[in-house]
Length: 307
Image 1: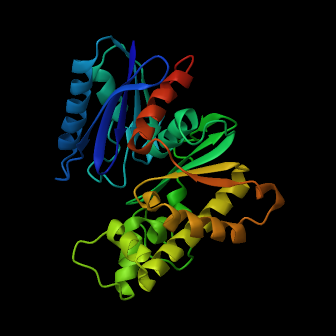
Image 2 (image 1 turned 90 degrees about the vertical axis):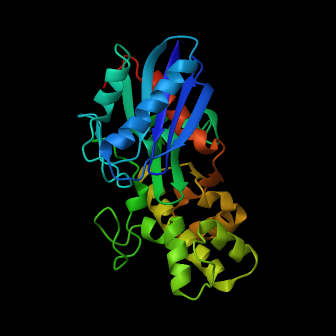
């Protein structure tokens, strides 16, 4: 018996099959359609499900779904900021209709990333953990006392929208000054260009990282600015949730020491409370599979299953 798992975001739709131990035995990725048509995105999800079912050599007993949010767990709907054509989209019911009789467990993609890393990645053994993705946006999820914490609506851990600049830039969430407006890859690139970074048209976060490693002072300052904002956010969340570990993944996190060295240095300035002295920040281990592993783990932890 397999758990079919999905990870749906603004740039990719991943599908997988997990065995009874929670290990992935199949995974595949396709791009998220960008034509702004809700049914077009759904067709891509449905095709990913069909592909996974075709390769399964055992029945699908349940489905775990990680989706960009906000999510509404009570209604089973999603309204992703980065899939604007999906507003209150009935994702759980749509998936359930394709696999009759299999319970469907929905979670935010940040929560599933955190849960995946906690189960099989860099978060193994942690009791109070924040999992983060720093990429085109900044996302996150919480594992508290060893269990996923979704909150009242399913959106706990939305750390990308912690405010770090009171008079900061407008954010796609409707607020302003969110850490995502400072520390995401596109935000760092935008700031660097505005402050004199001369780069080829189309150069993104990867190009900015290469320039910083090569010694470009504006690119280095963009990373310092971004990591300082991340450190302020992490210190705040850690103080509220009494964390012992932060696991950071995503495209920007693949910059390695360029991100982690200044992040840890800045965190020492912000996390001054004695009970935060042992807080560790480490890179993620599962890469793009963390959301799928976490979605499957959501199903395993739902005993008895609840919507």
